[in-house]
Length: 505
Image 1 (cartoon, helix red, strand yellow):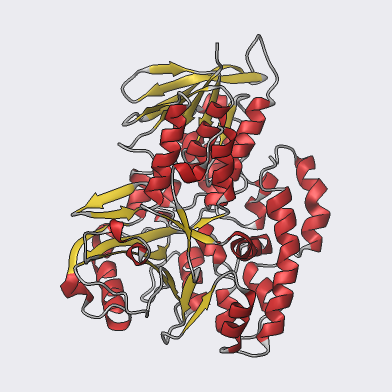
Image 2 (tube, rainbow, N blue to C red; image 1 turned 90 degrees about the vertical axis):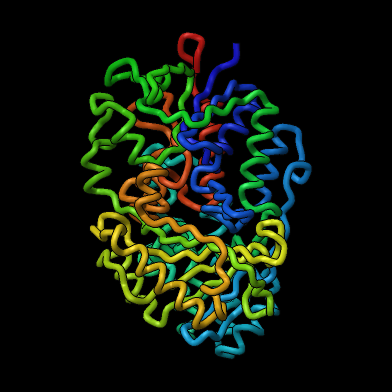
């Protein structure tokens, strides 16, 4: 009989692990709390518009190709990726912008418009980030850090690559202009980190984008979720929707504990040989596993008192009856506040909601008109905000904060915006906590600082339960699609290599 794997949650980490293991011959059952797969990549459909709730940027597309290839399929037969050019349009507080893509000469010309001296500095920056990329992504991203010795082995490399520096400080060694420093160091925000705190290892994200491009999925990121779902079902995997997990069942004692399956909210029990959690790591340990089956390392105290969590997000999804395709905006737009460092300090450290904001404005209909009714435009605008540890009362704060963002966009980027809105929906940190079960409403789980990376991060295999595995943003290597897909490969490798006990791995 096939060994059975239960996957809790159907974000990209869970989908990647499920597809990989189903392709290897395992019976895979995915249990999802919501009414459709996707997790943070859920799709909202409203008034003829489609809005991707979560990730919109596809980098390292070969990682999806690998999953389909493992099953003997071609990704392009299931879903279409198209390159974005520019990758991003980044605006300063005056509305002046820089574009960048994978063409070095184009980027250098863009840089020159801001500061001629930074042309050569950028070349040096890219030369050094290549080494970071080769070590941090190519070599280590899909390797589990289960033992402290795994960490000790890479310390010389981490020291050589200046991982003690922050991404912002690292970029600043090479770039003089303040706005350009921000442009080439903002990437940690895409995975829940503060560029002024996050280890310089994350400088490799810019290199990764240059290496493989930034892509968009035709039909939205939800089309990629559906493609993976179709692949999993073709491989006899099964989805159980509206199936919220109440408990991970564990047998044995401190010397050898095993997950035997799960109990759902409705009381039904499902057994398995292996359990993979794509749910939030802190939620999994503190809510789904009895404390008697956990060591101090995975205690409530650790996850509630010793762990730092990423910021949350305030996101407004809206559609207009007017098209804004006059060339002023691109598909992906980043609007940086003048008070950039102070704003990030307010979000991450002071845990207070500032009057200003930095924004990501997504315009999918610029590439894919199918995301909106004919002649209409679909948007989402995202603002990083403190997680629920801040004590902010979003019941009172959400509407004024929404109004401030929309007025800012109308005044600076989208003329007559509010008169042209025909549909709208927003989410705030309460959504991440209540709907997505993310601790403190964090949008990216465990914050990616050096002391919470690699071995210091929650492990891909539980120390307490032999056959319990973790994928997704909160485990190694971290958030972002390349990170969570790497975690799914780690889970596959660990399960495939697990020792057999009594005929079962």
